[in-house]
Image (cartoon, rainbow, N blue to C red; front, side, top):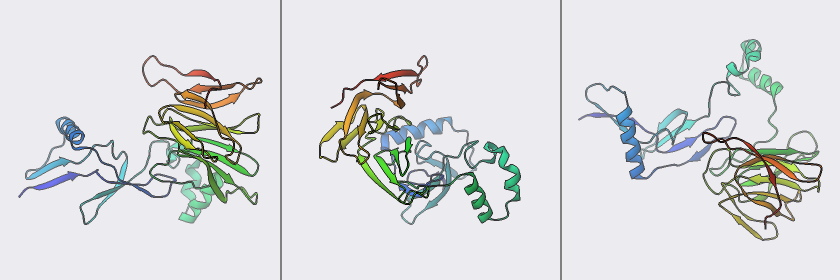
Length: 278
């Protein structure tokens, strides 16, 4: 009986650097998996010893940057992964000035103290399977707003010590589609009217505001505003592709940049966002 050498990547337990552990189960349909397996097998240069065979369970699109793996009693595969890359936050090659103090560290607690001198974590956000990256942040005197699909979160520093003790979603329903990375929420800004403004790219939104009114834009980007507590919510502009970090000029016009350049010949562009939502 031949033994099999397996490349198992079908069920993932994801661990992301600087985030708590979360678990996500992913899979592909049989036809897609078969095509991917055939392509990989045809291009593979792996040489096996006599008596071994190799099967592809899934491609690296399901499990980029795997680190560790375990198989449970039911034969399900779990892996941990990280977005490790050269010159990342915890790669010494990206922080040459850390080399000498790093060599002097003698314990984990020494490392903890050193990192806290470099930066301090003031808030640890949600980490569900539908949670996007934090694409925008607005810090005020005693609160902060962070855009992390599917929510616009308001954080509160009740005792003014620099750490946020509580958070609430003042608006929910962003990032409907699995689209291009970076097309999520961004641009948390306080407008000249005292309202909080933010946007979502073309991965869409389907929102019910605090008054119970629905705002359904699942297939387009929008720019929105509300009071700091989420009341008086409005869609200011619709039909956005992927604008980021807008500003107000002296006349109150909203100017943003559309992050394009995905294809040859394309370039970034400035966009004047005019009112025309709900």
